[in-house]
Image (tube, rainbow over all chains, first blue to last red; front, side, top):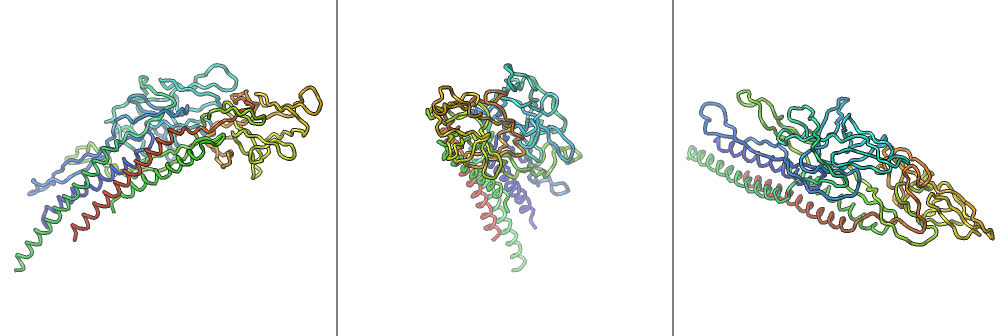
Length: 245
Length: 262
């Protein structure tokens, strides 16, 4: 069979997968703290004698967009948004082992034991997971220090400080659960310069316009690949006819 | 089949759920003691098709990998326990809780239920009840010949009984609070029920131990912000639309594929 159809196939395959990336981004256009996935394709040469002119397409899609999402006021004291660059640290427990992961989502809750949580993950402070005493008022300062007023106390009492990290986004990838982790798998050091704001929540950083345009582009791209399929088919057919007649 | 269709489906479903929450919030904009719901989304798991750093050509590690997401899902709805605005009604048996805490009533299933709606009533036995007629806990009975019922900030209920000149203390309203009120189960009828997530109730006297004060003659309105809900509604509608666009784009791609093969 003609090599053209396989080259066109790698292009069509790439479009289908890239479409999946954009569909996922758009589906998460409303997920708090979501970071868009970026897709990029590169050419890969086919190894072997006589193939030097053939390049197939290879898709890469584990880069994460560093753009900031829009923030909105919610007034809820356990909603926290990172101002500028930076990430929250959470603890992921999987089969008894726990590791650190990072996120921009700041819709924290407190569980029945007073532990600060993000979904099912414990939020990390300076010395591990943060446990809050029963409180009547909670404040999170710009540098992530959590203070509470409990019982009849007049003054706020400092409990812990959120672990905030500030890595380069190019050093991050997503794990299977969608949380950010360092590419080398190491825990990141805390950065004292990261600023947060309480009572606010950062949305997704997906740009709807960009995603729509990419979807349209991919759709047309796919049509072109299909044209190539057709011409490869016609050419093979013409060859077959030559033998027959 | 094209996985983009299934992914867009999760996005459409999520926005559907959000719209339902918005509709419920807006419907309850005038419900006393109502707390708005917020839908929380999370991205679904990722398929890692090629690990970054995998060995590539000539033994060089690949700088990027392939990770494909699977869409979004609704993790849950969160009750937002911010305080609603206070309305002064002047009614003797209307109470508002300024701060944290819940009134306790004997629930329909024999368990204690918790509420922030303070439209209290008196039933035929003279007991204080909530608007649905569930008896307030601890029980307080107001004698038939009582006049000028007063509820103090700490919840002490007193009234002038018969011809007496001094007020008699009839009982004490007690409030309960939870370490994680978001974890309470909303039963409807403005009632909440304790769950494993909310923790055990901490009962106490109003105004002490972080509990709010009780204000007589006022009601706590709903904490739904109409403008915020409208903006949420527009956002949900448009996101829904865009997800369906991707759905039809994926459909078109499959159609061209089918035509090319013909």
